[in-house]
Length: 119
Image 1 (cartoon, rainbow, N blue to C red):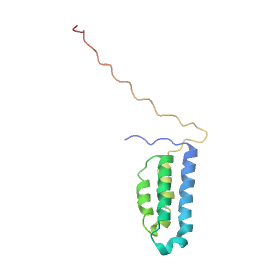
Image 2: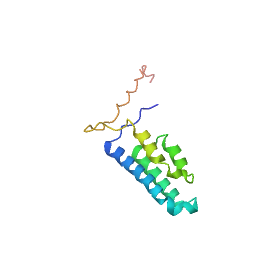
Image 3: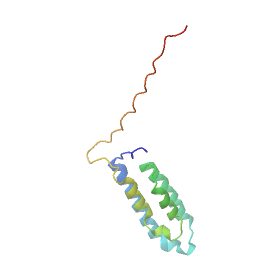
Image 4: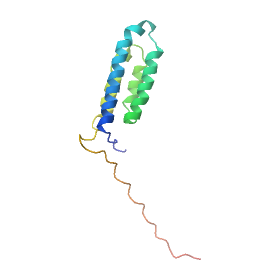
């Protein structure tokens, strides 16, 4: 298994702000959509937020249960995006003032010795 990629502090901050804003928006929208119980407005928000978070932090297993929970009526007010993003970005941010360096290059391919050509 590969170690998780290091993310820039800006990407981590953007993902966390997006997750908190999405959860707060869904809590604020609850009184407006409660009689409908299943609303496409919240589902559209969740799909857009899920795609944006994958684009910001890459795929992480914590995003899948958050997405499923957000599709369940009334469970969507639980701050699952916030929890998932904090789990997904924990320990992946570059140190402040540090540069995000690419990982080490792959090892060189072994040279196969060739015998004398028969031509």
